[in-house]
Image 1 (cartoon, helix red, strand yellow):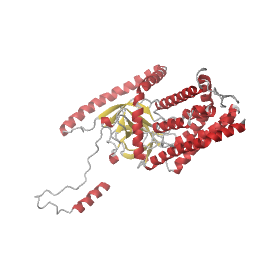
Image 2 (tube, helix red, strand yellow):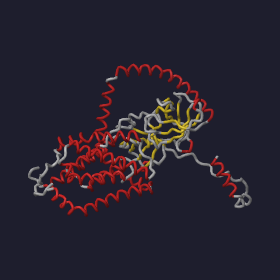
Image 3 (cartoon, one colour):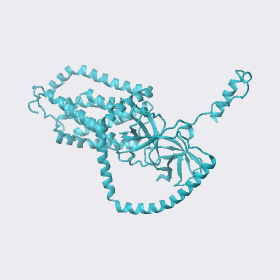
Image 4 (cartoon, one colour):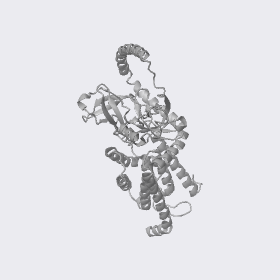
Length: 180
Length: 308
C-alpha cells in the first residue's frame, strides 16, 4: 500500500471498518444464544468504534458511525436512534481529544475511553427513564458495561496486530505533507 | 505546534460541528417519532429486517452448522453417562407407552360414541429460526415465514413439544417470535391437576415466573402447566412446562420446549374463538320481529355478557 495515495488508503480503511461492523452485527444475530445467560457478552461494536476513533479518527467519519449504529439499533430491537445519537456525541467528544490522546500512555487512553463508555451507558438509561420506557435489567446491564470496558484493550490489540492500526507518532505527516 | 493545530481545527470546525449536530438531532427525532408512533416505526423495522436478514442466510447457515457440530462433539464426551440415563428413561417410557396405548384405544372408543370432531382449524406452519434478538436483554427469534405464509400477530409458536412464544412483528418473509423468557412476555396458564389459573411472566431467566396463583398451597413442583386460552390470545391446552421451585423460593416454570436448540418452530394457525355478540333474535314472522325490537336493550345485554 506504499504507492497508493492517502485518499485510497482512507477509503480502504473505511471499507474495512464497515465490513468489520457488519460482521459483528451478524455474529451477534446468529441464533446460538436463545437461552438467557448471566454472563453477558461485551458490546464489541462500541469498543471497536471507540478504539478506531481514538486512534485514527479520519478512518471513521460520523456518517459511517451513524449508519452502522442505526442499522444495529434496528436489528437488535433497541429504540431506534437513541443509542446512535449517544454514540455519535461520544465519538465527537473523543475525536476532539484524539490529538491529545496520541501523546498519552495506553493506560490513560483506556481510562478516557472507559469514562466515555460509562457515560454512554448511563446516558442511555437516563434517556429511557426520561421517556418512560422500561430500562433493561440492571445487573446484566452493568455487567455488559464492565465487559465492554475490559474488551477495549483486547479489541485495540487485535486491530493493532492484525490490521496494523496504530496511533500516528507525534509530528507524523501524511503523504501530502499535512499534519495528521 | 499545538497552537497551529488549534487554528486548523477552528477553520474546518464550525460547518462540521453543525452537520454532526444535525445528524444527532435527526437520530433523536427518529427516536421520538418511534416513542410517539411506535407501530409505524416498528413496521418499518420489520421491513428492514425482512430485507436484510434473508440476504445473509447463506452466511449464517454454515456458521450455525459449525457451531452445532462443536456442541455435538462436546456432548460425545458425556456419551456413556447419557447412554445410562437414556436406558433408564426408556424403561419408564415403555411403561408409559403401554398406558398411552390403552388410553388411546379408550379415547377412540369414547370419541366414536360421542361423534367428536377435532378442530380442523388448528393446523400449523413450520419455520426455520434465522436469528436471535442480538441483545442480551431481549429474548426473541426471527423465523423465515411471514405474512406471505399467512402468519398473523399473536399466534403461538411451539417446538415439537412445548410452547416457545408468541408472534410479534410480521414482515413479508420473516416473523419475530417473542420467547416466553422475555421480560415483556405474559401468558395466561392453567396448572394442571389443581386447575389453578396463573400468569406466566418472563424475567430474562431460563425459568419464567408463575405469578398471580390463586392458591399457591395447591401447587406442587412437578405439576404440568398448559395454556388456559384466557383472553383469546392462545388456543387452550398447549403444553408449556412443569412447575419448579426456584432458588429464591418462588414458583417458576421448567419449560418443556428445548430452548438450547431452537431450530424449527411451528406456528399454530389460530382463528380465535368466534365471539357471541348478541343475545339472538326472536324467531317470528317478519312483521313482528322486525325493526321494532329494542336494539339498545340487547346491546347492553351483550356488553354485560362480554364483561362477565
